[in-house]
Length: 87
Image 1: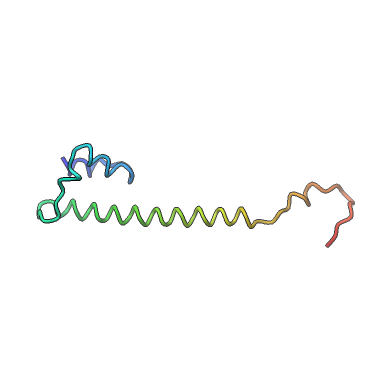
Image 2: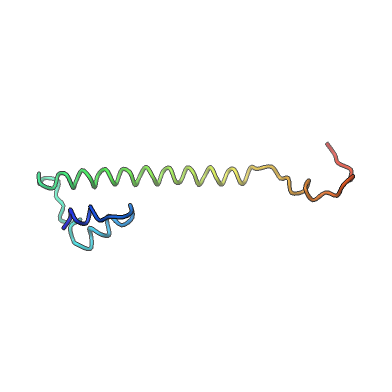
């Protein structure tokens, strides 16, 4: 059942809940050689989830900083023609 749950996982967030539904996540033991493939997959998926969360945070922070530090051009665009401008 654990192999089926791993193969049918569609997204990163549904892996652990899928294994918990089948009660397989709590029974996975690192000492069993037959489950070594599943354990390595779970470890790899946890690492990927951690890397993706880190990269998503970097992108969100970068986007927020770009919005915060952009040029304020809306005052210039709303100025009427031939109005005095301080340079």
